Length: 286
Image (cartoon, rainbow, N blue to C red):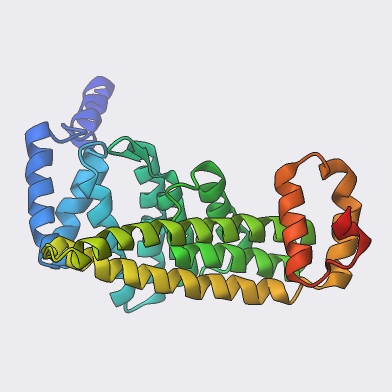
């Protein structure tokens, strides 16, 4: 009797298939993708969730559309319970995305994925600033190349600045170092955007008609250029509150000996002293 009872429990409490077949996965992928393309996210949700749970390595589209679907559900949630559930699902999705599709066309995407995760926390009221900062920091330290969203770069610094002001995790030296790194990143973004705009402008000047894609790209580059300038100004305003000669000179004097053979540190320190009119101090000459 005990044997048959155990057999009954195995047969009727264990799913006969723990995973969908390849054909079933592809069918569900097609269903949710078609719905998501026309922004019918309610219809897309169930087949999308089925693919995510059963075939997580099938397609990058699972994560690209999943991000859009869950953001829509968060936005339209009528209760905090629902919003919290979908937000947790979204944050988990980024982790699965990084695990299953860390690259796209051979290019690493870790910086892009985890900076998006940090931004999602900020946008949806997550209070743990250390967690948000650590998420941005992981993205930047592990893959700065694909961490290119100017808003997220600025809020990475903003979050670090907030932690500095509360006296937790970030000291003044780390704050200035992070500012220098991010300023250089913004300048790199501006240079890359300018190069792309120049290519399109030269084509226009030659009298050759732009393709519809090039017209769209030109508009995107202009928007991104304005965003980079605006967010760079934001972090400049934050650091200006701390970057006075009275603060900079003791800070750099204290760290000079251990960094005097580090050309990057020297260049940043000298540039900051000069930029704040501290160049008449003996430290600048040194």
